Figure 1 (cartoon, one colour):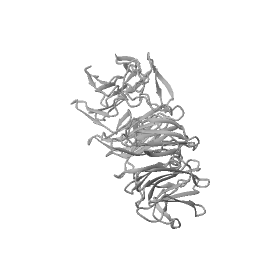
Figure 2 (cartoon, helix red, strand yellow):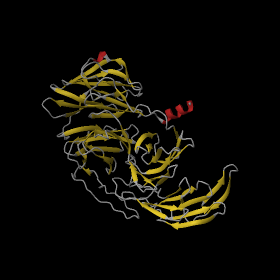
Figure 3 (cartoon, helix red, strand yellow):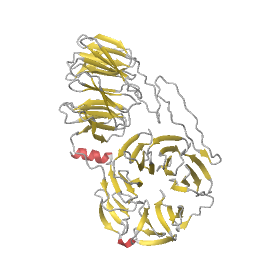
Figure 4 (spheres, one colour):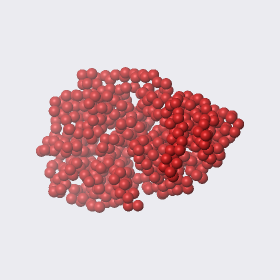
Length: 579
C-alpha cells in the first residue's frame, strides 16, 4: 500500500493498493502522477486525482533473498596433531548469483524516477538494466549494464534532465552516468560498497552518493572526479538528499540515524605529523589517551607528547638517551626501554627509578610490549649475527620465561592472548601457531596459504585472532573458539607491514606498501573495507590505537610518525549541542 497524506492536515487523503510489497515510489514534477515499483516487478503509473492506473507493465521480480554464494575458499585452523588445513567448497543456488570475496548482498534492488522535465520515466530493474519510457510518445529505451552489475539500487536525474546516474547493485561499486540524449556513459569509481542512493545538487554541478561502505561522496560532474569524501556513520548509508538551496546534505543510515552535513565546510587536516623523527617502535600511549611517549631518532631523550596538539610537553631526561624501542604497561607503572647494543631497562615510571637491567650483548632491541594484564613483558631481540629471537619475562621478579618446547625457529612475530595463557607465533613459512605457555604444547596450527612471514594479533576480548602474510597481503580473521576462518580480503599487493585490532575489537587495521592503499581499516563483523587513510610515503611498520580508540597512529621505518583522530560519538554530540 502507498499512503498519500496531507502534511498540513496530518491525515491520509488517498491509498493506492498493490499486490506485493512496494520498493520504490516517485512523484512527477507537477505532482499529478505517481510511479510505483513492487517487488513482484510490476510498475504502475497512477493519476493521483482519479487514483487510477494509467500505465502498467512488468519487469523482473525483485529477489530479496540473501546471496550466500562466495568464491572465497573456506579456511580452518587445525588442531596441533593435524598440520594440514582443509579447503571445503561452499555452494548455494539462488536466483541471482555473484562471486565476491565475502557474501555481500542487498535487498535494495529496483527504483523508479521521473526526469525533472517530466518527459521521461526511468525504471531501474532488479536485473542489470534501466528502462526509459518517453511519456509523450510511449517509446521505450533499454539501457543494459554489463557485469559485474546485478541490479539497479539507485537512480538520479540531473536538474536539466540531461544526465542519468545509477548505482548498479552489490556486484558493482561504481556509479554509472549516462548522457540521456547521446547515450554516452562515464563512471565514477571510489566506493568500496554498493551504492544505495544518489542525488544531484540543485545547480547540477555536484553528484552526492551514499554507500554501504559508510561514506558519502561528492563528485564533480564536469571533471568526472571525486571532490570530497565524508565519513561519520557507523553503518551503511541508505539515503541522501540536498536542501533546496544546496547548502546542506541530509543522510539516513541503516541503523536509523539521520545526519546533517555541510558540503561547503573546509575539511580538517587528514592527519598530524610528529615534528621530529622517532624510532619506529613507538609511540606508547598513557591510559587516559591524552599523552604518549616516543623515542627520538637517531638519538636523544624520550619525550612525552600531547596527543591533541602533537607537541612535546616534557623531555624525560632522567631515563637517559639513545633508546630505540619502548613499551608502557597498561596501568602506566612500568616502562621498558631498549637500545641498539642489547640493553633493556625497566623503570617504575611513577617512582622514576630503574628496577632492572636485562642485557643481550651485540644485539638490537626492536620490540617491547606488555601483555594486556601487565603480567608479562615481551620483546624482540635481534643479534648482530642475525636471526631475531623472541623473549618473555614475568613482571613479578623480572625472570625470563624459558621457551623450552616452543618452536621459535623461523619466528617472525608474536602476540599474547588477553588471558596471558596462549602465545601466538607467526612464522616465516606462511603459518602461525598457538602455544600453551603452561604446558609448552602446541594448541593449533594455522595455514595462512601464503609463503611469506605472518603477522599475528589477538582481539582485545580474545574472541578473534587475525593473521596476515607480509608478502601476499591476505588478511584472515579466525574465531578463537571454533578456529573457523573468515577471509577479510587481500589488502596489499606489494607488502603488508603491520596488523592491529581497535580497543573495542570492531575494527582491524593494516599498513602496507601500495601507491593507493597505505593504511586500511576493516569492519570485523562484515569483513568490509570501511576506510583507506591518506598518509606520507614510507614503510609504516608499527601501527595501533590509543586506549580510547579515538586516535590511530603509524610509525615508519624512516622515522615519520602520523596521527589520525576520530572523535567519539559523545564528543560529536557535545559539539553539536554547543552549536
